[in-house]
Length: 377
Image (cartoon, rainbow, N blue to C red; front, side):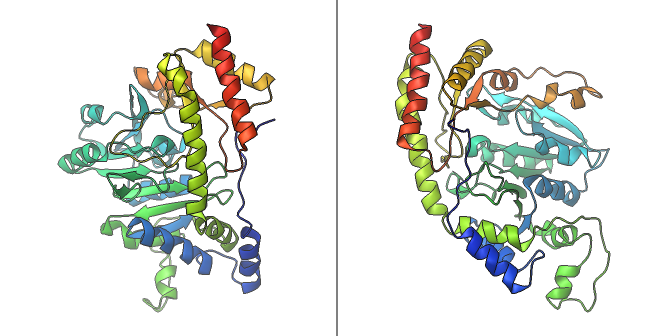
């Protein structure tokens, strides 16, 4: 079986984990945590970064930082993972879902302003597949309406918008290091704070509502419970694993980009025959090779190809189910019409994609897809 994903290990992960264990400092915010946070701050121009146990945790910290509650509305794309909305729902906020672009799963920035009311507090953008949302348009809307912009950059490490690193543009951002991402730690995430008004409080929320971090820096002579928060810090074991990955980010990215490009080049004739749509890369965005997907004309065709690939021991998967149609959302909300989110729900297929995908495996996948369409003609 060619799996959909296979975690890549650099070989240094267990070395650094052993160092963390032998240091006697296993809880969060040790040497490896600080190395990882500084890496993002130095390389991606983020003002303050905090490691978390997941991207979901980082988003939940965002919800706490902006003090969202039952009187607030948060604009979120419907075509995304549940965490993008759940973090704010847990704080009581109402989610207002936005549609995708016609040719790209990202949020349609031109539709955002029509969703704003006097209750709107924030806009969440998701850089799907590591491809940037039109951030100039989003930030312009946010500035005119005094809204917070939160970048769900779970898939967007080392990707850029007009030369600016994704995750450094909005007021807040969240990254994921889940085993399916480019850079991994099994589970894990990071909160990036780009607006100085959130920096001091972010550490308090991160440290279970205490000013513990300030105490250990010698800024206060004791620490106590001063705000809301939770235990969002990962252990040094997770941070040590992540550091081994970050040290090799250039190597990992170069290999992933070559895999992505081969898929694109070999499958382009199918797009030229109008049989599939390949990923669209706007001129303002870079590609970080997080995934490779193809888009079909209809659900029936996608279902047939998944079955065909499975019969040949190739595991391809569809992705998100539109959140505006989820059972949980519809318990208390009426159904919205978001045709493009539904289109990608029904027609987008993710292909196997991982660092150690061999040429032989790659060729098998591509040949199987081309043969499928030849047989369909």
